[in-house]
Image (tube, rainbow over all chains, first blue to last red; front, side):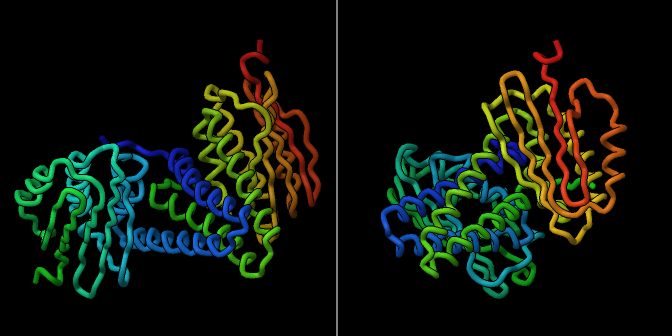
Length: 184
Length: 184
């Protein structure tokens, strides 16, 4: 189910997330744990840099899908990191977004809902090569559901599943985005 | 000119604003000014409470107009405070928003663009009475522009200008929202 987000709701959720961080700083300030405060600040700045990089890939559907994900889905918490120099993914935005939406939907249905399910999506931008690495930790109740998806996923001109390992408590899936230069 | 905002842009601006606050905390941490850090945290929490209250008035057009204002307009910086118990302003959302948009547009054209123009909008929610108080500090180059608007504004069933004072360096305008209970 997709939700339509308006500005007030986006700002409400965003404010809520940021206030949690501020409260964390406040709590540690009250305890005099200044080193921890500095660490939290660095974590916040790093997380923001990742989101800023994600927003700069010229793939607005992908960026908004991934950034709003944690507000829509409570079964799985998603963390994003973007490594490498920014690239223009505008040509592949729709296809990548739809693949990710589909894949995360399968993962969502396969995991144990009440477990701590954490997924790190690492977007690696190398020269002429873009990879999405999904690194999951948590509890997968239905491995077969995910395997079926990965084995039977229709061949796409843009997305190629390079590698995957699915266990009950962890999973790594590596996907390659075939940009124009790689297709030639 | 109204801008259509998408999720990525809203998150980008919001992240930018929040990061400025984090950088302010970081700077003061580095200088060992822990009291100032605590002050900044309290200011941030207060500002967020005002925005949360504004978002809870069931007037989404008004809330998004006011919260996005500083990202669209660089001539005037707007600060919001909401005092009193939350009320349901849904019936008046369109009319209030359109009046505020119109008024701020006139103010915008009347002030000196490069000056530090600061406007505090205080929304006061008393039982059965809602007031919007606009408190401006800065440089007004064209007082008459604003006076014309305030004197000739069409009579509205919902909005009544109670009081105004317009000077070259400050201005206070008090507007009453006539909610159903007051019209009876």
